[in-house]
Image (cartoon, rainbow, N blue to C red; front, top):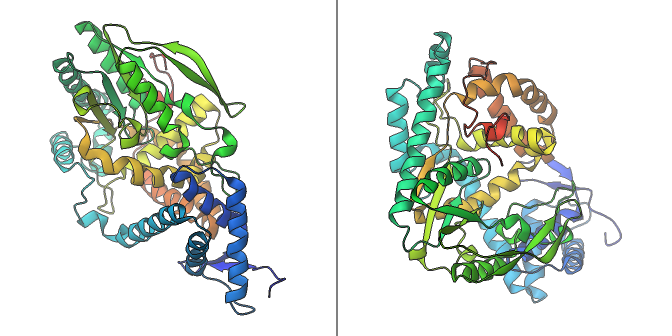
Length: 448
C-alpha cells in the first residue's frame, strides 16, 4: 500500500470524490494563516506526513472517510510541534460540524447573532407596506405599483442612514474612528458616501483608510485545488500594521500608507503620507471592521460602529424567508460583472469562502455595534429575475451531480426557485441614480 495512492475519499454525505492531497495541504496552510503562519512549504511537508500516516494505518484497498483524514491531520500537527495550528484546525472543524448540525433548525431557533429587535422592526414595516411575501410583492407590481415600492423602500433606507448620521454627530467631540462594517455586498460603500454627505452639513468629513492596501502578497494567501484564493478572512490583511497606523492617525500623527498592486499581487510599503485634519474623522470601511484585532488599540469611547445587512423580511411560496446571504450573492455577482469584469459563475464557486469567513469573523460581532442599517430593497428581487434567471438555470443543471460543487449547487437551486416565483421587472428607470442598488447593478451617480 505504501507505494500506492488513494484514489477516492468518502464525504460526509456519502458521496465519493477523487482523493486530492492538495486539499490537505490547503487545509493545513489555512489553519496556519489563521494564527499568523505563512510557511507554505511546511504545510506541504505536513500534508505528506498525513498521507504517509494514512497509508500505514489503513488497510490496503480501503477508501478513507473525510473524518479519518481530518483525524490524521490533527495527529500530525500535534506530533510535529504545531499545537497552535492544530488548535485552529480543530476549532474550525468543530465549527463546521456545529454549522451542519444546526442548519436544519435555524428557522425555529433564536441565534445570539441575529439582531432580533431590528428584524422585527423591518418585518413590521414590510407587513404595513404589503411587502412581507413574494406573492404580495407580485400583486403590487402587477397593479403597476413598482415605482411606489421603490419610493417606499428607498425612504426607509434613507431614514436608517439619517439615524446613524445623527448619532455620529452627537458624539463628534470625542470621536476618532467610524467603522462601517458588514458582510460582502451589504452596501457599505454607498452608505458611507451618504453618511458623509450628511456629516458635511455639520462641518465634518471622513478620511478613509483603505484596508485593501494592507493585503499580504498573493503567494501568501491560501489557495484551493481549483486555483481560487481565499481573500475573505481577516488574516488575509496585515492586522498588526493596520492597528499600528490606526493608533498613530488617531493621535494626530502622520503615517505612510502602503499600496497594493492587485495586478502583480504585491504590497509596496510606505507609499502615501496620511494625517487627519482638525475636522476629519477616520473612516474604516471594511468587511472585518468589527473583528476585534483590527482596532484593538483604539479605546471604545473613540469608536462608532455601523453594521449593514439587507434584512429583507419576505416569505416565499414555501413559507421560508428569502435569505439575506442569497441577496448579497446576487448583488456581488452583478457588481463583479459590471465593475470588475468577473464571471458571475466564479462568484458562485467562491461564495463558500465568503460565507465561512462571515459566520466566523463578522456575524459574531454584531452585538458590539452602535447602530444597524437595513440595506434591503424589497423591489430588488423583481429586477434580478430578468438579469440572472437563465444563469441560475444553467448552474443548477451543471452542478446537480458534481459532489465537489455541492455548495454551488445548493445555492443555485435555492435562488432559482426564488427567482422563478418573482414577477420580473425590466424597466429599472424608477430606481434613483444614488440608490444603494446602483452600487451593484450600475448606473450610479455616486463616485466609488
